[in-house]
Amino acid sequence: MLRREFLNGFGLSVGASLLAPSTVLGVQTTTAIGTSHIQPGDWTALRNLFPLTRKYIQLSTFLLASHPKPVADAIEKHRHAFDENPSDYWHHHFETIDRDICTVAGQYMGCEAKNIALTDSTTMGLAMVYSGLQLQPGDEVLQTVHDHYSTDMSLAYRAQRTGAKINRIALYDDPAQVSTDDVLKRMKAAITPNTRVFAATWVHSSTGVKLPIRAMADTISALNKQRKANQQILFCVDGVHGFGIEDQNISELGCDFFIAGTHKWIFGPRGTGLVWGNDKAWAQSEPVIPSFSASYEVWMGGMTQDQVPVGEHMSPGGFHSFEHRWALPEAFKLHLQLGKANVQQRIHQLNQQTKEGLAKMPHVTLYTPAGNELSSGLVCFDVEGVSPADVVKTMHNKGIIMSSTPYRISYARFAPSLLNNEQEIEQALAEIQALA
Ligand SMILES: Cc1ncc(COP(=O)(O)O)c(C=O)c1O
Image 1 (cartoon, helix red, strand yellow):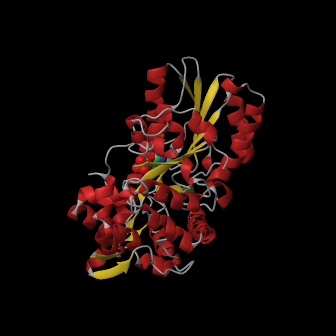
Image 2 (tube, protein in one colour):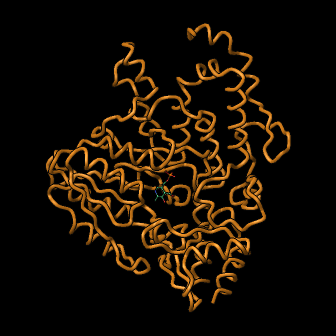
Image 3 (cartoon, rainbow, N blue to C red):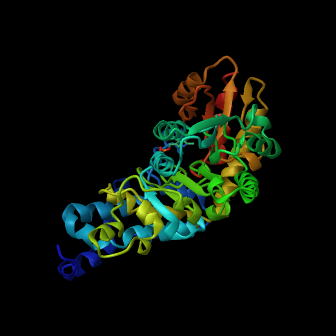
């Protein structure tokens, strides 16, 4: 449809979509999108926004978000409009909506919207970044033994295609004893003149260790100052388990690429994620999947590539589950309403309580560092004589949902979040105590 024709027919549906019916929680309501009226730090009110069952204590909500009401309402609004008139609804929004989403994401992240690409998951972002990097045979990528499967495999596939070599290092042996000095020492020792990329993970879902990304970035930056332009090291971070917890502006974290899903701690719609890159990082990347942004207009001959924001150009195109993607701003707005400092304080407090409780139990070995400096929202541990899988099963039978780490060495894992309270943590600790 011609753009003008389409705009002419649009007035009615815009007005209609501002107030949308919702059947979330089984109640028919009319809700103004984006207004949950939640007060900063009101954790009980926050919990009430989630349809999450109360039959269980949920200590694994980071795995995949339950949609809070403002997100669910926005999804419902978009779904309804798409089902009613997909072509018009898409035509009206597609030119501006990704930019609007990135603007809200940028407000939360403390970075420019133009540098954000939208993805469907952490895995898609990692694959996109590592597939798009310009690498030659003989170039080296340094990664760690602590990274997730998705980083490992994205790099392995890339190495197969380019002839680049992957080197792996351990940044610590005993996670509970990790130190910033030792991490920096090991990282520096493993970087060679051929290292072009350093891939790391902010918070390890294998151990709960939170890496000192800023200090690592400063070390890499100092090394880069002594290197020629074609020998620079790019620092790429899988940030998914710090994102939505740590009170951190992403552009000040110091890495060049920051990759995360938004369907875990951020509470965004399932099937959403993003990549932030600084200008230097994007300049060294090539798109992998053609974007359906203004780059399409470049292909048509109506624009030049420099007129397209780089993040939009790098966002994988094709049609998506738009009702989910377009509802993402509501999750960032919710976090901003709660206050980033409050969110960090609350999650750290509940994790501290969990670790202090576990540390007192002689039959428990705690692997996650005790302090918040080098840990965040994940607590990994072992119970003497009980396998992690059996700990998870027994706790489930007691009404507590937790996880075991999906790595070759597996631990039992709690993830105390904004959806928990102090009493729930005490109850979970009491059940672990009962395993003695
Ligand atoms: C460190 C880390 N990176 C990536 C992923 C994959 O995330 P996604 O499901 O968003 O692709 C996970 C899974 O939880 C993870 O723990």
